[in-house]
Length: 312
Image (cartoon, rainbow, N blue to C red):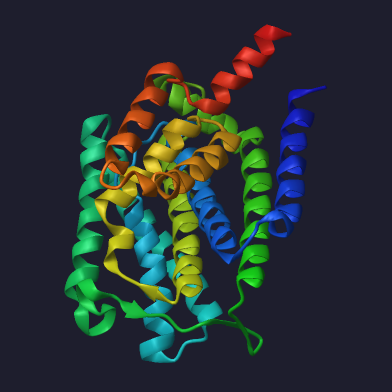
C-alpha cells in the first residue's frame, strides 16, 4: 500500500470514527468535549503547516483565534451583520492583517521570530481587553447564535456535525497541500532557505502565504468557537492559549497531519481527565508533557509510525 493510500486510509478512519462517535457518547458533556477537541484540531492543523512544514515558529497564534472570535461577536452585535457574513469577513480581515505583518516578521529567524510573533499576539490581546466599548473588556461579551438562511444553530448535535465536516475537509486539504508543488516548496525552505532560494523557490512569498493560511484557519475556528459557546472573553487570545496550541503540535507530531489531530484530542481531554487531582492537576499535566518530550521527542504519531515500520 502506497504512502498516499495510507494517508487517505487515515482520513477514512477518522471520518468513520466521527460518524459513529456521537452515538457512542453517554451524554452531552462528552459531545461538548468532542466538539472542543475538533475545533482545536483544525486550528492545530493550520499551525502545524506553518511550524512543521515551513519551519516558522509562532508564539502568538491565539491572537488570530481571538480576532476571529471577537469580529464574529462584534459585527452582528454592534453593526447588525449576518453572523455567517461576519465570520468570513473576520477570516478575510485576519488574513489581510497576517499578510501585512508577514513581510517584516518572517524576515526574522529563530528566537527573534518567536519573540516577534509573541509580541503580535500580546498586542492583539491588549487591544481586545482595552476596547471595552466593543469587546466588553476583560469580562468579555455575548455572541449572537449562528444563523444560516434564517435557521439558528443551537443544538450540540448540529454543531458536532458542522465541526466534524470541517475537520475532515481540513485534513483532506492539508494532505493535498503538502503533496502539491506548494507543499514541496514549504518542505524545501524548512530544510534550507538558501538552498530553496537557489532552486528557484520564492522563499518570502511562500512563508507569507502559509502564515496567512494558518491565520485564516485560526480565525475561522475562533468564529466557530464564539458562536458555539455563545460568550467570548479576551482569554481566548492570550499567551497561555498560544502555548497550548503549540504544545498540541509538538506532542502530536511536528510535520504530521494526523499528529495535529492526536495532539489536539489528547491535550483537550487531558485537563478534564486530571480535574479530580484537586490542586495537583497542573503538576500532573506538566509531568505528562515532559514525559512526552523525553520518550517521544518527535511526537506521538511519527514515533509510533517509525516503530511500526521497523516492526515490519
